[in-house]
Image 1: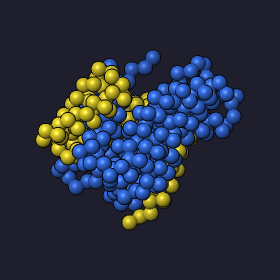
Image 2: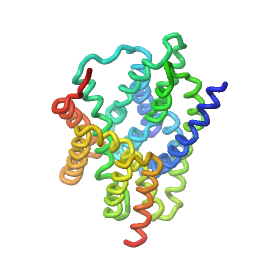
Image 3: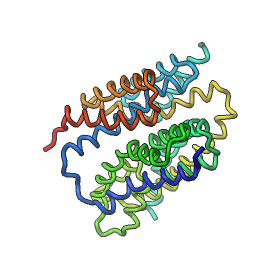
Image 4: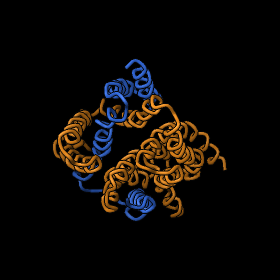
Length: 100
Length: 227
């Protein structure tokens, strides 16, 4: 087992550097088009990779997780906002797992 | 003083959303063996949903410290863009400490709040929001760790998808306007599923590999249009 406090220190330092450096030291815009496009797509890929299949592994029943993904996606597509989408995802799992 | 108050008020809906998501994150943290205090400390210092989720999975997998740094870079690299963008919204005359603090607490929601102001963002407005929402995020994580072990399994199972709901609310709306994003989301789902089911690559490594490969592919195949 590695030390959790060292992990927290590594996490804090890394994430703070990423957030603070461009704001403080590097104040010029990025010129390279490829790097800008790469950075533009990164959040969508990272969050998608972290969502699936993790969402069907997080729930007791994989089917409930899958349905939660589908209904949550529809709610997000209708731009219902962070809070409502989250509630719909949780409620789907809660209701479905009562019946399964 | 006025902007601090206004920020605090606008920070309330953000804080409530954070609390719910942090709670679900706490359940993941508990699975990685963190104590409520360690969860509180992590969320207080790191303030990143995807980043902390990836980190807790990495802790569970007992990864080397260097790999932890790498996973933090990858799961948070979007903040580089936001930090650049926010940099243009700060009065050049304002003190360095404001840039430092606004950077330290840079999240998607605080970013949206800060750039909604014209022509420059008032740091005290953001500090007001931090005052309410940062403790919500940290205490939500700690409570998730505590309650994750007490609540009935059925409730925990339902709450554990809250984090993914938040991710969906972030990635799906832009995919409506940008087909490239929609294609990348589907590709990400598919390849993440295949790698996790048919290889022995760890979850945190899959996140690193796919982020670099698929975002690079996106930049190559779908260059964004600019003026």
